[in-house]
Image (cartoon, rainbow, N blue to C red; front, side):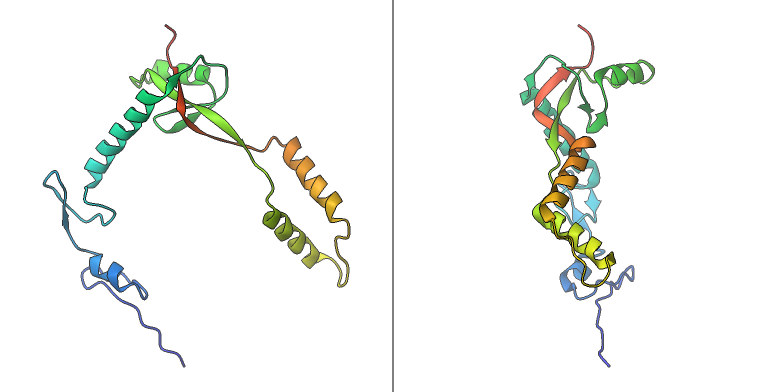
Length: 169
């Protein structure tokens, strides 16, 4: 019989497996640059200061982005994906955000990676009768690519280099 050892925080009782350092820092308090005590181990800032820092960072990204004409498609307002500028304006009538600018979105076409294709083939072959295999792998790959193409498999991400006005001016 094998014995299993785990580190346990003496303060809160959380189990840390074999992570001795994580256990040691579990309920440790840290001092933020603003003077507040916190227990966030991800840095030297409390959550409030991290949020303020993120706002400044995002504002800088927006300020440095190129102002473009809106030509359709999704936008990102305060990190939230919105389908169209019109939908944002419709929503903002009832809940003004005070924002004047937003990042545009850019599309990333999803491509089927070779290892994902191989995984699909392996999964399907598990359900085939013993000795039967997908012989024509090229046809199968074509079918997968046709499916991806037909289903407009696109992932929208924030384009931090381009921005658009949210209001009509």
